[in-house]
Length: 467
Image (tube, rainbow, N blue to C red; front, top):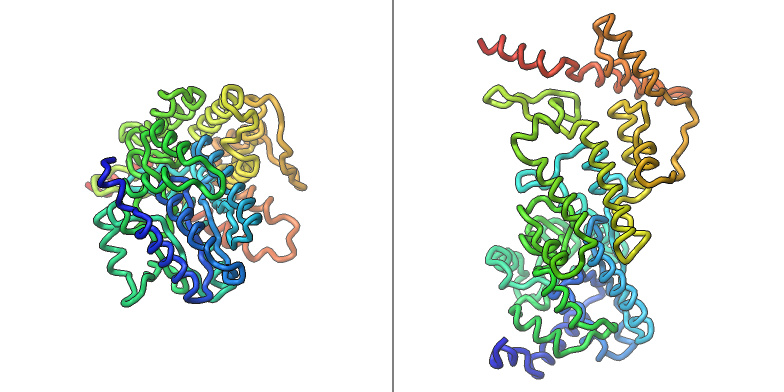
C-alpha cells in the first residue's frame, strides 16, 4: 500500500462515513441485519457501524442490530473457530458497552444440510452447472432469519459488506436497485427488506488500511485476520442473500467441500503454511471433485433419477441420477475416517465434520428410499469410530439384510423386481397402524409409476423404438 493510497480514509472522511451510518440508523425504526462472514469486508462494515453507533447517546441506541454469520456446517474448521470466537466477543463487548448488537449463527435445516443431500439423497457433488448448495446452505438460512425479523418488525434493513470494486456486475446491480434519493436499495427477492452497503465505495486498500489503523472494538486482533488471509491466500466468502451476491471464487474462506472450483487454493495454502492436520480434508474434497469426471458418471451414479424415472438424452444416452447407494456408503466411511484423523491430529479432539443429527437423517433416507434393510449407517459408524450413537429406535420391527436376500431370491424366481417389492413392503410398514391410510394409495401408485427395468432393458428398448 502506497502512502497516497493509505491516506484515502483520513479522519474527516472517516467521520463523514460514521455520520452517514448514524443518519441511516436514526432515520427509521427498521432493525438492521448485518451479514458477517469473518472476512475483511464484512469485518470492516461491522466495525464501522460499531464505532459509529458508539458515539450515540444510550437512549438513541434502541433499534436492534442483528449480526448474523452463515454457518453451512461444512466451513473450514479453522475459520469456524475464528467466527465463533468473534461472535462470542461481539456479544460480550456489546453487553458491556450497552450497544444494541446481538450476534448469532444461522444454519441450514438439518434435513437439508450438505451431507444429508449428498450422502442421504445422493446429490452429485456441486458443479458450476449444478450448484445446488448455495440456495440450501446459504441463501435459505439467511433469508429465513430476515423473514422472521421482518415479520416481527414489518420491515428490515439488511447491511452487507460488499464493494463496487469487487465486481463490475455487482456494481451495476447495486446501481439498478438503488432507491432514488436514498442510500438504500431494494432487496432482490424479499419485499419487506431493504439493503444498505456502507463500504460500497471503498477499495481493497482502504479496507486493509482501516482494519490496521482502527482496533477491533470487540477485542479481536485485526492483524490475525491479515495473517489468515496471507496464509490462506484467500478472498472472503460473503454472506449470500440472493443469486447476485458474488460467489466465493477460486480463493476463499468458505466450504472445505467446495467442488465448484477446480482446486482449493485456500486449503492448500493453509496446509503449506503449517496446518497439516487439514490435509485429510483436502484429500477428501479432491476425491469428491473426481466424481464429477464424465467418465466416472456411469460407474458412480444410478441410471434412474430420484423419482424413479429414467431420462434419456438426445444422443440416446442416459442422464445419470444420484450416486449409487454403495458409492454413498463408501463416501460416508471415508468421511468418518477423515473426522477421526482430524480429531486425533487437529486442535479440537471433538471436531465433528458430520453431526449425529445428519447421520440420523441419512439413515432414515437410506432405509425409506433405498431399502437399506441392512441398516448400514450405524454399522459404518461403529466400524470406523469404534463406538455407537444413540440411534433412533423404531417401534415396528425392521426388515434385515437376511430377509432382503430371501426376498431377492423369491422375486428372481417369479421375475418380479425385488426393489419394487421391498419398496412396497416399506410403504406398508410405514403406514401400519394408522387410522387413516389414504396417503398409502398415492405412495403405492407412485411406486408402480417408477421405471423398474434394468439399465440394459432401458437401452435395448430405446434402440428398438429408435429404429
